[in-house]
Length: 400
Image 1 (spheres, rainbow, N blue to C red):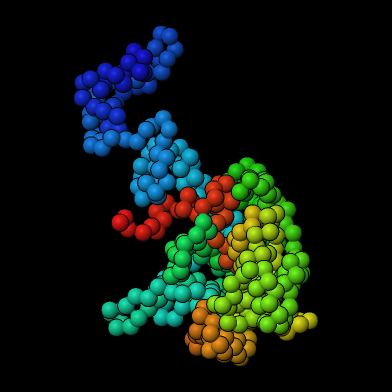
Image 2: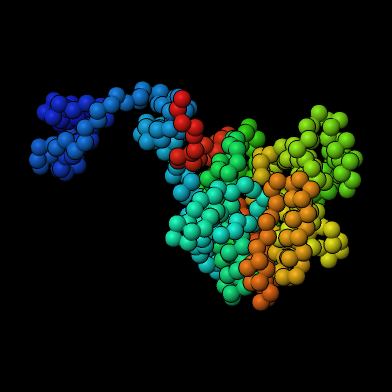
């Protein structure tokens, strides 16, 4: 019998509707006309009853909010959503394969931490009943991974959730997935080369090509430009070490700087507003001011500049990397510098971590470290405009 006829017959026998799940046992075969069919051994069995009408199965689920709130329906009827979910899995698999083959060891570090650190961000706070103490959902894995470098694990990485109690946008979610790796006896230029190789390898493995189209731009993960941060800002007429002058230049461009209390905040604002959106082709910005980078090693030529880089594709930052600061006394001074920034009105600063400083006092080898946003990388490789499309269950406001 023809397959279509078989389905119709089963529907009549079991009184099934669209969306019901039916079990049939038999042998696959073909009819005399060569059409696929199933020669059944037993009567079909109803395995699950669909008690809700499915969305339009021809056009798929179109309402964006419903797609995010009821992702199971989105996956059920939208082929593209299933493809994106599978692509994300392939991205993570490809990253793990690359790092494992390079001799890195995957580890797990605490999600609940007594002190948060490793980034400038507002944490989520919770209470640990057993310890009768407030703990924080981690904002980064950095400080624990570098403790492992001190302990003699010379190549480590972690892929896991981080949490930052901040706003949402097309590229921000309070809960997100990060890759961080740390490699002993490497510096930020070694890390640049490894990042470029990883990005090209993952793109090729996932999509079969290093070229992708993102936000109407074709970009090639096999071709990276390297540019000093000061030069990038200078291209926009915004590089100056004078806070008043930088505020003046930003104000002249109708930028609201009233929340920027320090030169570092003004510079970061200039970077995000003018430089980042212009970095369409894959680009590495390197050599950052020390005020923006409390964990990076200073350059040999200029102690006010550190060996740090960020990397961008399609006008969006994908990640951040350093030659890690490994001098315990200097790290303590950097934490003190952050305290001064906080006293001057900077809200997001490193609070300091005495135990981490003590760990460094036992000697950490020169180390290169990197963070990569898995969600953002998946956005680019899938060609999606918003991070919510590549997170299966994004955070949403409750319905009114």
